[in-house]
Length: 287
Image 1 (cartoon, rainbow, N blue to C red):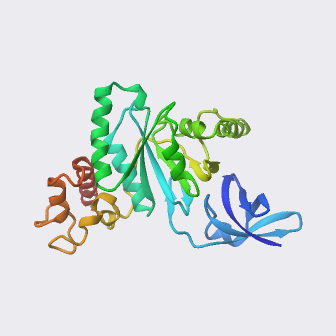
Image 2: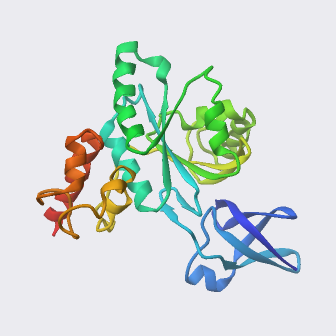
Image 3: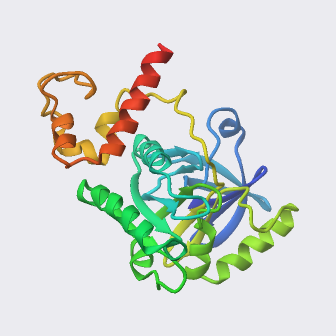
């Protein structure tokens, strides 16, 4: 018997696959273990061999994130907090770049808005309004907010949450679905690890969609990534790509650059552009 399904959890060599029959546990066929192992989010074909299930095929992926290792993602919620850890435009930009390089649509999600003075919150919101005007979707979440807009964009989609440790990723999922905390506590107990630390990637059913809660991180390494197409992937740059004087414009030192003109006119956030230039300089220095 064969079934099509989606890999929703991987722990060690055990793959949990969601199928029309429900959840089953499977192992990859030998050819997959040698060539390309399944990742969470993969659409697969499984077959029953006596009393066990085996993953036989992996469908072509629409995209793939390396951290968390996830495939076929509709959107990435880039979670950035106002406090503990403090808001960091540079970290936000780098998370956006990583997501966009993987061909995944980013959504900026600001958390812990209730923990900072009104003046500081107004400054953060003012900056994020620049991101919103340049094409990014920006949401806010804090205890008591209801999170209706967040729930609506999760419904029917596969999403990942990425951001610093402590930014509030698990907390907002708990607000959307109280059962999420119980499930993660059970998983952590089974793994022998602290209940507040996400150590593996799993797709959870939340608000009518599938959501991956992911390990937090505070530093991002671009040294192994191909940045040649970065400018064409950045949402804020999209309206001006192809409008520069030179077709191979890198938008740094070239004259008559449409992207630089958009920055000077306030149509692209200055901080995002400066972080783009910084990555380009790092790339040049490596060469």
